Image 1 (tube, rainbow, N blue to C red):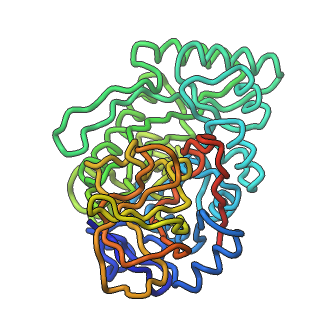
Image 2: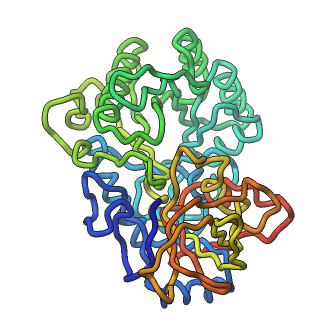
Length: 423
């Protein structure tokens, strides 16, 4: 069980509140709001439930993942983690580019001021309309099969445009710990289809300008992450040599986790920053290196935006059933699916939840936090320690800036959508 009353302001490590930013055994810094600040944000939003995203926390998270990435790599933010326009606009000046995987995300990224040449349109199965929109917008596109290569080639000819193709190479996801077996996935071009994809793209108006070797998400073991990056760089160099490619862009994924449940393993930040011997990548590419002058990119989503968000929710009722205390709030799994039993699950652990301005912060007892939905799955935190709360009091969930509203079944029971603000 984990939780504590909200106090103070600023940013702190959720795993160890006294630890500083970048604690090698801790989590990314999560937002801490003073009670008065939390109340003002709720008033600004016009009520609860409301997600509040901190620009300061976004900046610190970007700095932290940049220091833990391939040396000299550019940092791209994946909008699927949180496409809120205010968040994307705030990140446009902090990261080097965006990864988008829908036309909606594409427009959000362009409207935030990110140049088209710094956008990568991804996705395992793109429609003809998406292909046309991406090429018309001047953004780079990933190609994941011979059929997609033919689609983009035909679309470019029809529109009378060129374009930049980035071949996504099928890359098995490594095990979570060193030595564990990798797992297969549906993404990218298979080894047997690579020659055909290269042939089609070379005969098209598109330039084959890059490779994407995305190898997974939510990894905390520094040895696994560094080895996967190194393998991706080596494979990119091998493919460039095999097919005579002059690469301008090589994406090697991100992989760094955003732990937010109490049983999630902490990220080894010190191991990721280490320049010592081991499986980690060496210096960035140079003009005479195996990748030539290619720009190396690391892509991140939840590890950037996850720690920057809190969910503020009001208590609607408190009751005891069979000696269990239930705290019912106005946020439900339709707003914060990632915290529900469907995603987090009892084996995953519990999210960090605090009472905002409790009357007796020292008197803690177990509570089950549930939402207002007519569903047994609408449990947001189970047997967490909370002080006494009453109707009208507020709770704050921390570390929930990723996979919130757009990941949640907002239409379930036709209830009001959650609010979102950036501060």
